[in-house]
Structures are given as structure tokens and as C-alpha cells.
Image 1 (cartoon, rainbow, N blue to C red):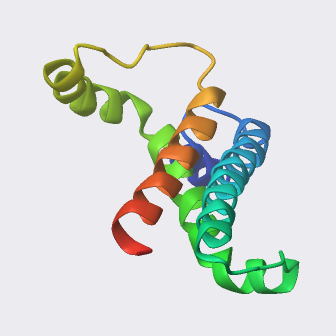
Image 2 (tube, rainbow, N blue to C red):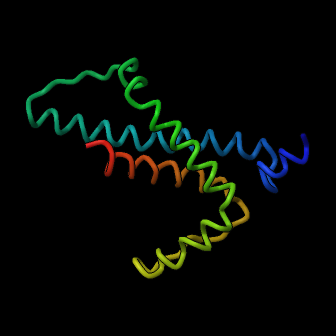
Length: 125
């Protein structure tokens, strides 16, 4: 079992991933809050009054949050590959590169927020 966990988790201990997934959850929730505020303002302009319902929110968003957790885990698990592949594209597009850092926990937060942004931009019209 130890060999499997080492292959599955890479060089980081399981505690790193647990903490990272909590940060990923927080990043997803931050973006969802932003999207709700934007939706609320649009509804006010149109004259609709939508009260927040936690039950509806969970039913409507649980899949997006699971996707964020999975994408964050995979990106951080294979961060060296992701940075090597993504940096030239980002550098060419905006003149910026993702930093390579020892403390990769911030990538969980960033990837979750970017994933939520992509879901809202491309899949939730």
C-alpha cells in the first residue's frame, strides 16, 4: 500500500493534499460567491428578487465543486508537467510565467478559482 500511495500522491504527504483540497474548496467558494453577487446585481437590474437558498445552491453547484477539487488535485500532483507545458503559452499570451515554488499549496486555491471561472464562462450560460 505504501508504494501505491507514493505513486498516487507523489513526493507530498497526504496531509499536504488534505490541506490543499481545503484551500481548493475555499477557492471554489470564493469564486461562487463572486458569481452569486454578480447574478444578484443582474437580477436587481431586471427587477427579479432571488433570495439565496443553501439547499438550491448545493443542488446546483456540487458538481462544479467536485470538478474543482479533482482538477486542483491533478494539477498540483503533476505541477512540474503543468508548469512546463503552461508557462510558454502564458508567456507568449501575456508576458507572465507561473512561478515555480516549493510551497505549492497556493496552486490549489488558484486552480480551483480558474476552474470555476472556466465553468461559469464556458458551461454555465
